[in-house]
Image (cartoon, rainbow over all chains, first blue to last red):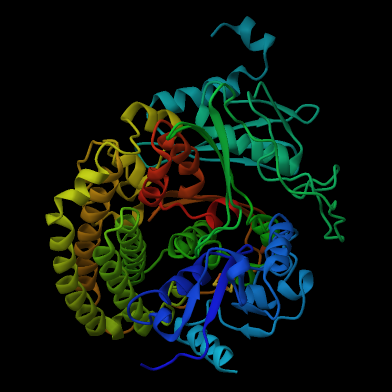
Length: 133
Length: 487
Ligand code: SF4
């Protein structure tokens, strides 16, 4: 049997996305891309996660919840901004209740996946790279 | 009404005029607040005309319509939150959009400048409405979720296995989109409009263009109209495919779920190859594409139809699946009408309303409205099945009309565009209305009232009395977007 050395468990938080980024993340779970067979999965609790995927420009209302989820992810951990909004270069940067990206409220993300929304293949490639690094 | 009563209450006219529109069966488009204290409601009449009823705040107060028209309850709470106007007589003025984190004097839609906001460092939770009594448990879910879902916070009052009441605290994703649109030019606003919501983007783009074109007096070339129909119907198929694939997941029918998602992926890839974006963001702004891509579109449609029939057969013949959907999450006709339900949720309750029948864009098409009456999850599933097939027919018909050489349809938006326009369309999630006020090419006020916004209170109503375990299924049968509602 082939032993898989690594896996990557991700928790997702929507922090004000337009839902297209979510739909692309969902596409990763479809049988076409099937992230699970690479050892990558979306987990239900931040305590089980190696990485946090954030979408959206971080609305003020979501900021406290996002911070709590991030605190709950055990170290070593990876912060991944999915999409232009989370990366701080989306179209809603300047809206009054948007904090303008994940780096403004948490820290500089370890990985930034640009795109509006990024292609699911691109998200998958980044996650696989991260898993193997 | 006597003159005397008019004098007694200056608001009578405001209330009565709105009630008469509702009684006449008109479709309510939007309730919009303005910085100068005006409040307007817009009604779509059976003859396609849009009527405006307005009132003005006195001492920052206006008469609440909610006691007579419960469907405006959220809109009035939103105006209260964002403008600080008080809807007098509103039965439930808890904050809807604002949170305890907002500075007390901060009313974003009143504000002119974009100074730095000092958010208060407290939890954003607003008071919840719960049922109290022996044996009742309160279950809070969200705002973050275990899977890949948009953020929303739900407070359930539960007795035994059943939901007594659901208080949905949305607006977790509130960015302030309407305010962000103010002071932008038409060109600058375009990408924001596309991204109000990933699931109804084409409908939002259409409303925006339609408002701009009304004011500019543009006569849209027929070829462009057919192309717009193709885009609107392609989005409906995409969104319905997503929802049709999600419903089986709610009952563990994994094969239909996965094959449904695969079908969505195929459709989405095809659209992306033709229109340049997997969600059709900004697609309607470009006017050059379709004639040259006609053949490609026909091929995509043909291969999609083959997959669709296979999938439909799979879903149709699973009696257990249909039994599981029947009688769950029921919204009866009267309730749907009273609560102001729109789109699939309304049609599934036996009400034949689809505003495509009134949109001038569809004047050369006959819109078929599914005749379904159950009001349950099964009914909403059936409506979507029929609507996908009707959208296929509408696209086929539009493709027939796409012919001839690529015409030059370019036009320029007048720099001094000024006025107010109301536009609407039938998005995949139901009636979607926009109100735009613009002066010398600069947006002064922009209001978006999406189908999802309308249907959230209907969903909360639909889950009451059902088992907690059925919430995911009922939720998926509505599959409301948060982004459109939260803005
Ligand atoms: S990056 Fe684009 S697709 Fe993703 S949430 Fe932002 S606007 Fe939507």
